[in-house]
Image 1 (cartoon, rainbow, N blue to C red):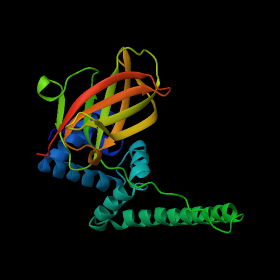
Image 2: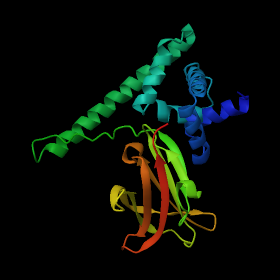
Image 3: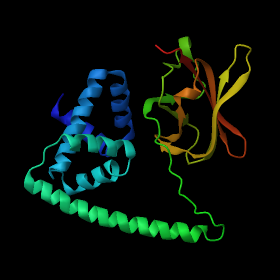
Length: 251
């Protein structure tokens, strides 16, 4: 792969890449096993640069904000660390940072314990913070225009992903300023009825070209094969636009 593309993948791993470019990389590495392995090799190289102290200060900060906080990425860091030899001088410097990290973690634990104690004094039960489960990866990015027919008529059709998230960008060409929306995605049954597959309110549209876009992310497990109608409405209830698309059986 060209060096420029390697740097692009490193920027993606550090969270510095734009949404469109990131979605392109994700779509490709989930569809191409050889490309997926190459991305893993680039990630290994990036982690090696971090362990050897070769990252620039900005990149090091971005790396630590992701690989030291996200469980899956921290696990990957530890995997590479376990098979990466370290020179004595580097190892000594790492142990020094590790001691500072342990001391900082101890202070955080003490502060958290005190907070839990005071939070739970009134009920006798400590309130344990909730941890959000990791989000499924983004598999597809789909753009829908209002009134476009589905499937064989020339509209949007895609195969049902086995897992992950599908991002829909719903165009609101007649809107010039942000609007608070509700989005409903319904599957059309063979009898012509609609069964709700996914719904969410409180979504604020974003400026896109001369109009607005409403972006939603739906888990692939909610999209069974069939024809779908997506509706963007104002929170008060007035429908703004309707979109049609088809989900084909898995390939």
